[in-house]
Length: 321
Image (cartoon, rainbow, N blue to C red; front, side, top):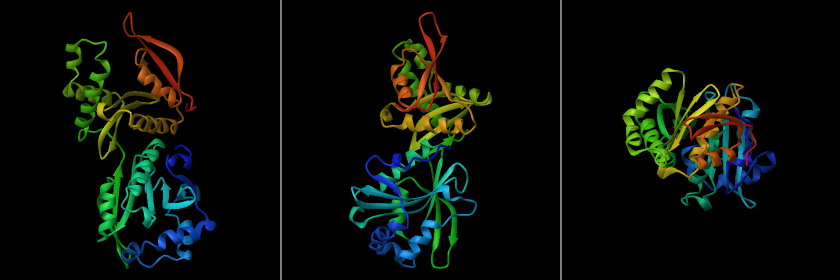
């Protein structure tokens, strides 16, 4: 996976790694959240914060853990304990998340989780896992609102029971969700090709047609992925180093979804030691801008589609514009 650059976790807040020098600020934030500790005893202390800052799950190293502070100017607004590659290599684990009482109920926590989810996706992680204390209605409501669903597992920690929950940001396309992938592919493909293809050819590429297209490509070794923001919003395919079929629902374009899914597959390809590449039609200037912004450059290779239209190959060089 890519090395985590915590500066990119939020556009609104300054994010920094917290240390023992920040214990007093963290204690000030946490100690005002008395309701949380009613459900999750014992009450917070400076010593318990220091212990949490150092705690690691089995098999994890110090470099996998990020005990983070979100700052609005110099004010600590939120604290998050984020562990990468746990409980499996494609999952990020939120061990703790709390906002200051002054911003609760104002959408701040949800905005932070949304930004974190998109960023984690761009680093090549497909899922986020966490837990909340059973019978804590505020926690359950918050995490449900942010797309997390119970896995069915619970853990008895004597003083309370933890409900395990998970959110999939990116999912492999299978027969269970191929209809979603085909719908996005069909709608977006038709829209992107309408300017230079006749209507009969456009209409041929309906959902059923694209289902068979996806099935055939998967038979031949391509992997398809769906990006979710509660509902599926984008699709892409990968075979070795080649990225294809990146489509975002028309009404969801210009919201960063294409970038998030692109960066996800770039990270997955690079983890295999390969250089990501893709081809675009030479008249697809919107796609060209997207790829140039995200570290792709023309390789110089062309592929003639017709006498008047060619594809251009782009390769990833890692320089983000």
